[in-house]
Length: 353
Image 1 (cartoon, rainbow, N blue to C red):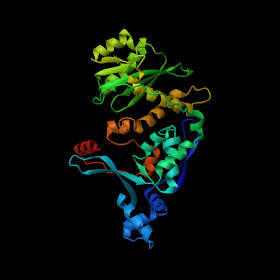
Image 2 (cartoon, one colour):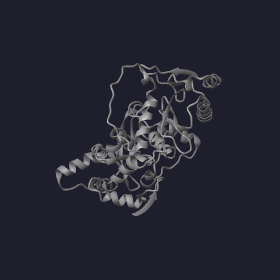
Image 3 (cartoon, rainbow, N blue to C red):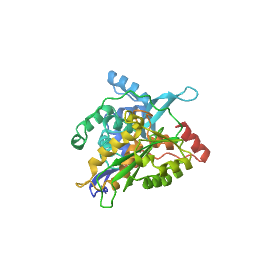
Image 4 (cartoon, one colour):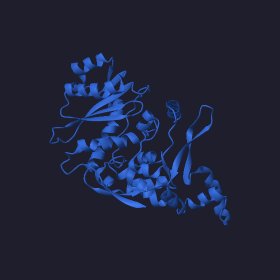
């Protein structure tokens, strides 16, 4: 196993384990939680201890051995069209690599961004599994010094509100503006957009929050890329109520809806993203807090790959592309899938996901 010193975008160096399949096989076979299961799968041999043998026999039913690598088969809540059970194949992580997974999905500023316990657990369990994983993640986040220093533990009272109906993807976007520390380049704001159904986020640095700049982003980055939505939800700010934004909406036949001062939760998709961005940037910004435009893409990566636990249960990336986003560690740990031979086969695979 080799160690590579990988610099991040702030010049810090993180030790990264470089693996190949033989190394992974070796680590799994030397892990006390996995070795007996692998032996039983390969040779049908159980320990002499009756209690241990019974435990391994039961546990092994949840695992599959594929090309010498052990995977855990997690049963999904939903079933297929013919009521057959559906499973998600997860890499069985040996003890020697569990900390690497936690670092990659929690500490890294491209894909991690110090997510909270629930969000981190839901993200990792899309690809990986080990025994007592939930407790390990809980303890890791609880003892993270950066999280304790930078995060605010605040839970406001929820106001009763009828939720907006679920629409087809890209039919409704939520929009808001976040003000941050001015940068030497003149950026002061972030235009936040969240697609209502998939929770897919977009964030664009702005120098002003005036209508011309906002309308330009909407035209170039949203309407012409994802198509014209049916509606656009925002607050009653003058920048969103301007004649220019109104004219652009009319051109693309977009209905504009607005939150009210009494029910800002209607725009909750942006509110959650707002909090996530602020907390994530607080972890990585320089002492002047002016390098946030450079860090914003990594924060968006973390948001896109983690499941929206309060709504869809899937990551925004998976909702759009039919597969989970890869982070650098995944390329070293998870064996490459064989791609379908035709575009039709690929489309079928995406739909089945």
